[in-house]
Figure 1: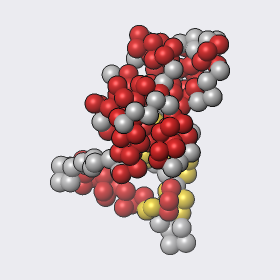
Figure 2 (figure 1 turned 180 degrees about the vertical axis):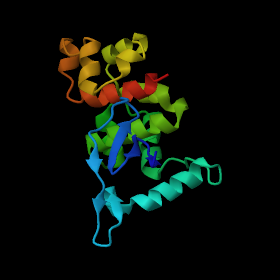
Figure 3 (figure 1 turned 120 degrees about the vertical axis):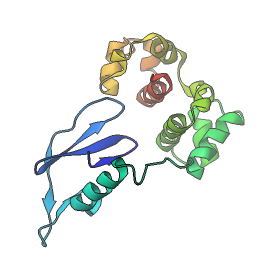
Length: 179
């Protein structure tokens, strides 16, 4: 492993790189390391593969343990809006001054960092989605959101189909009920 991020981990296999996504367990297609004009291997955001390997060795040898810091202020603000009484994602996005998609992202991040926020986060998820996720198996939670939606028969539920942000709700629910 070269790098472990919030959403995925980056791995190297010879001259190829690939990602494994934490929420789905899926592996991306392999892609070539980009070589710059000096012959150095680079990956996303123009980072040196060599530097990632060095950091990885240091991190996993015990000399520099990875620690997750506190949530960024924007995520705390979104969570605080729920604790202050926001009942919909529209209210959260309005109070944070961001789009609905961004508000969903903040709540997903908050739920990942603060397990005690799960009850507050569940307020913005459709009850049918919550109920299905509560009783589904770990195996049913794996895969893309579309696959999970189909496995849980949510794609045929007329109430859920009418929800504009059903996939964002499912993403958040999967975080809340991950074991």
